[in-house]
Image (tube, rainbow, N blue to C red; front, side, top):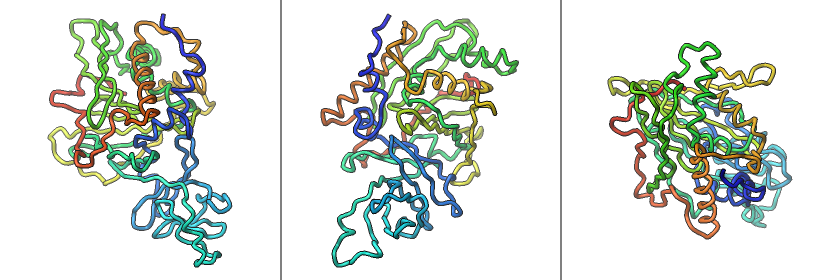
Length: 389
C-alpha cells in the first residue's frame, strides 16, 4: 500500500485558483478557452471562467480576439453585456473601453487631460487560434511560451472535428489521473458497453493485461508520461505508446484517427473538456474543410441528470465526477496498478516546486526561433490496433 495524501498535500496538487501553487504552475501553459465557432458575427462574445477567474472572450469585426476580466474596472458591471468595437470592448454602463491587452483607451465622461485612463490596467490575457481552437495564456507576460504546434491541429490531410463536452463537475486533477490509469478500460468501458449490448464493445481492451509500462518524456516543447499496455493473448494487436501531455492534455488513438483531449480547469470544482479529433485521409490528400472545424456538443447525462454511460465520455465523466468535487485522496488505497498515478502526482509536485523556486516548468518552449511542429504521430503509429472511443 502507498501512503495517502493528507488534506494539505491534496490541496497543493488540486486547487488552481489565483495565487495557489498549482494555479501558478498551470498559468505557465496555454489552455483552450473556447472553440472558434463558439463566437460569430451575431454573437461575438462569450462569458467564460478559467483557472478561477471570470472573463469575457470576444472577437472584433476584423476577426481578432480578446480575453478580459468580466467586471469593468470602473464600477464592476459585466463586460459581457458591453459593445464589441474595432479596437476593443466598451462597457455598457458608462462606456469605458478596453483594448485586447487591457489598456483603458476611452473614458467618455472623464477629463482627458487628467490622464486617468492611462492609470487603469484591466485584467487581460493573450489569445491565439490554432486548429479552430482558441488558446489563452494567463501567466506572467515575460514568461509566455510559444503556443505548441500539435501535429493533428496543423495538418490538412484529414478531417477535423471538435467535441465540446458537457461541463465536468469536479476538479481537473481527477480527469488527468485517469490518463495514467490504463486498467480502467476493462470494466469502465468494455464491460459497460458489452452489458449494454453494444456490438463494438472494444473487445481489444476486454482481456487481461500482461504488462503496463510508464516512461517520463521531456522534450524541449512538450513533456509528459508515456504509457503502454501489453495485452495478454497471442492474437492481440500491439498498442503503441501514447502520452499524458503535462499538465492537462491526453493524446489518444481512436478508430480511424487520433484525438487530443484538453482538460481546462474552470475553477477548483469544475472542468471543461474539449476533444479535438483528426481522421487522416486514406490517400494522404488535403481534405476540403473550413478553416474552423465543426463543433459538436457532447452530453454525458440523461434527462434525469444521471450518466447514461452509452459512450466513453459519459463513462469517464461518471468515474471522475462521482469521486466528489475534489477527490478525498486521504481515503484512497493505491496498489501496484496505480503507479502511473503516483508518478504523475510526483511530477506535478516537482513542477510546482520548480515554479515556486523561480524556474521554468517542463515542456514549455521559451525560444520562438524553435517553434516547430510537435509530431505525436510517428511513422508506423497506426490507429488500426485501437478500438473506437
